[in-house]
Amino acid sequence: METPKRRRSATRARLLEGALEVFAERGFHGASVEDICERAGFTRGAFYSNFGSKDELVLALFQATTDRLLEQISALLPDLANQPGSLLDAVLGLLDDAAPDQRQWHLISTEFTLHALRNADAAKALNEQRAMFREQLTRLVEEITAASNLRLSVPPEQFVRLVMALHEGARSQYLLEPAKVPAGSLEHTFLPMVLETISS
Amino acid sequence: METPKRRRSATRARLLEGALEVFAERGFHGASVEDICERAGFTRGAFYSNFGSKDELVLALFQATTDRLLEQISALLPDLANQPGSLLDAVLGLLDDAAPDQRQWHLISTEFTLHALRNADAAKALNEQRAMFREQLTRLVEEITAASNLRLSVPPEQFVRLVMALHEGARSQYLLEPAKVPAGSLEHTFLPMVLETISS
Image (cartoon, rainbow over all chains, first blue to last red; front, side):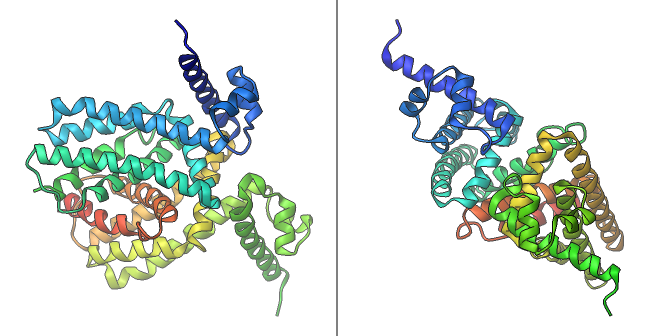
């Protein structure tokens, strides 16, 4: 039975989905709240009862994407905790699959990051969201290394920062030249080398 | 004595400089040719006698930045060719210094890359420019490894792609959180490990 709460959550989901499409087509700055409502089939009222602003909607997209990723990694843990190498491969695979759509997600997340570099409020909110994600990923790395009796010679958070930085830069190369840089190829080639070097 | 050729080159340089400022403030899409001319103190006629379009001007910025970087790396070669580790450090230092301004350069180069992901002509031109830069960097890596009697276990171009991807992703983290991620810190921590692993 449809409850008001469930309807509200479905409205949010459709707005997020519509926004992702419209942002990918017209860019974060080019897409208006009206465009998003039109795509999702809702009124401005529905939008503003769910999100305070376009920025808030994008942050909800970040949150949904990272939540899904963390859930999927956690689900892998029991099977792979004793094999850090395979776990790394599996996590890298997820990084690619977790985003609703690689290209759309790259466009909107990169654009919002640029927006944040020009807007202090957006930077604060984005940094908080990224910090939460990074902390959760770092905890996972710590759990995995503890379960495997491994010690890392750098702080686990630094390794997580490396994975995130390389993934973002590599995704840009992949999207520009998909035939020359298969998705995940740089990460799969080089991150295991780093993990091996910092593990003992 | 000022020749027409020298005047033309000074005009170009001032237009490039003005464009970099205006792009950083208003974004690639938000900045018009008029804005750029006004900042540089020239007419639209001067602009169009130097550049066919805004895209062409940005590609000239990429060209100028990468030319300067390649020149600076080449200048280091004689002194450092026998010390691949120090050379890597030096090159990483240059990657940061070569850009006219880290933040401005990150904003405009990232924005143009996003533009290229939505526009096939821009993608073609950007990919050509990036390929040239990558090839020249790859040749430098080959010269250095040959001079040091090193063999790499991955194609040198892959290593160059890694450096570029990591540098771009790390720069974004640095600009978002300068106090937490000093410029170049991820590159300086992790790239030497990779170089060590792939060298023999």
